[in-house]
Amino acid sequence: MNEPVLVVGAGPVGLTMALALKHRGVEVRIVDKAAARTDKSKALVLWPRTLEMLDMQGCVQPFVNAGTKAVGARILAQKNVLVHIRLDTVRGAYPYALMIPQSDTERLLEEQLALIGVHVERRVELVSFVDNGDDITAVLRHADGHDETVTSPYLAGCDGAHSTTRHTLAAQFEGDTLPSGWMLADVELDGEISQDELTICWTPDGVLLFVPIKGTRFRVIADVGLTPAVDASPLTLEEVQTLLDLRGPSGLRAHDPVWMSRFRINERKVRDYRQGRVFLCGDAAHVHSPAGGQGMNTGMQDAFNLAWKLAMVWHGQASPALLDSYSPERSAIGDQVLRNAGRLTKVAILRNPILQKIRNLAVGVLGRVPKVRQRMVDQLAEMDLHYRNSSLTVTPQGAARHPAPGERAPDVPLAAGSGGASRLHDVLATGKFAALSVAAAAVNVPDALQSIATAAGAGADQYYEAGYVYLIRPDAYVAMSTKSDNAAAIISALERLAAGA
Ligand SMILES: Cc1cc2nc3c(=O)[nH]c(=O)nc-3n(C[C@H](O)[C@H](O)[C@H](O)COP(=O)(O)OP(=O)(O)OC[C@H]3O[C@@H](n4cnc5c(N)ncnc54)[C@H](O)[C@@H]3O)c2cc1C
Image (cartoon, rainbow, N blue to C red; front, top):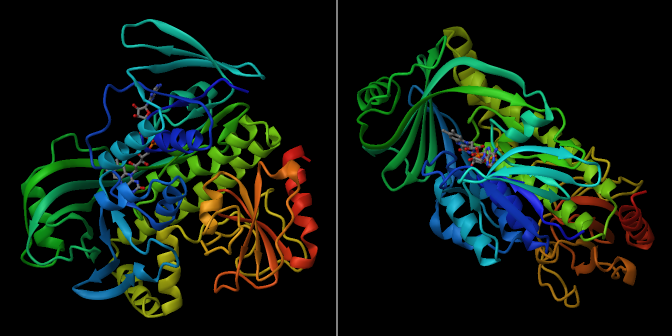
């Protein structure tokens, strides 16, 4: 297979997809119908799990340098703190939310892509495609109006909420538009408000959210009650100030807006993220409430999930059956994100005073329980995502409990002789599985499997159980684990993957 994979759309998800594929030696072509990148700040946060994934593409530092770190979040009701969570309890290398406008995220992704020789082809629109079974024939329309017909082994549709790819597949975008109206304003704020934490005010009139961007610049988001349709009139600074005065901490003054908008929330998702040789990723597959700030992050993780599988198949190292796991794995995550974001939104916009009282009481009590707070942190940080029920996850009797099969595989320092890598995630960055022995003899990976797996060894560690061997996927999830005297089971699992059994 040597034709490039066609990536349609150069938003954050398409750029991530192209980057992760090329990083693994796959030829890609990435096209976008727009003349330029977005200049809008849209998604403002990269969560710890996404940062970890960028680290595994070897490019997290420029993002960290360009962003600012938010270290916590508070929910206030009538000036009382109901919950205060701290992100420094995240068990990983990036214990914070990185605040960075989407326009910068896209710029940095595109720069990283250019460094490895891939350039976005702009003003090139996918207009149609046919899946021939053995490959895809796609028609691309160029800026001068001429149509180009291309053949590609796979098409990754990362073309956003109004996806041409999804429409061409006739895939239903099931769900609803919520009846409540919202406003968003990126403004400068004078007054007392935390610059390194998210502040959420639950008030009798609705919710008001402050997201720090940089210094005194904030995103202010508020619900404005039930509206039959989006109010088409432009949002004014006066309206924003009125909401601040009504719902916010006292003494805040908004000025110098850079972006103000009204919006409604869509909660929609496709059932299948794949049809034949065509994949849907990011907003093309799922859109939901911005509560929790998970949309772009979830899309980027769709890309990380698919890229290593496509790469192994493209290189002929694994059976195409490996690709069957993409849709079930990511669709389950999509369902979970939709559910959580929907719940957060509904709870935040309650208007009934009795229900508000019950909510505030319950959240105030739960917010004092450390375990509950940690669960909230892990959910926001996306550290709790798992593939326990995936067909790729094997749970033999006697598997280790920490981390369990399907769960995230934290980074650990490696012993000498682990394929030249000093940390587990460096092994995974090569696009291979790691057969990780923890305080146990190294696994002997046969020559025939060396192209997809590397043996690695670690000493006893807080995250892993001593005396076990773990098979870790290239996207840092545990595929299986077993007692070290049964390491042959790990080799059998790899052989099945390569053969597609
Ligand atoms: C106000 C707002 C706030 C948000 N806040 C957050 C947040 O805090 N956290 C978070 O994670 N997410 C957030 N999101 C969501 C986030 O912006 C989206 O999830 C993200 O942009 C999706 O990326 P994408 O690459 O899938 O799609 P898009 O960004 O929509 O990119 C799709 C690209 O495909 C191109 N395209 C479309 N059709 C074609 C075609 N036929 N041929 C070629 N190219 C095509 C488009 O030009 C576009 O460049 C927010 C969104 C909004 C609007």
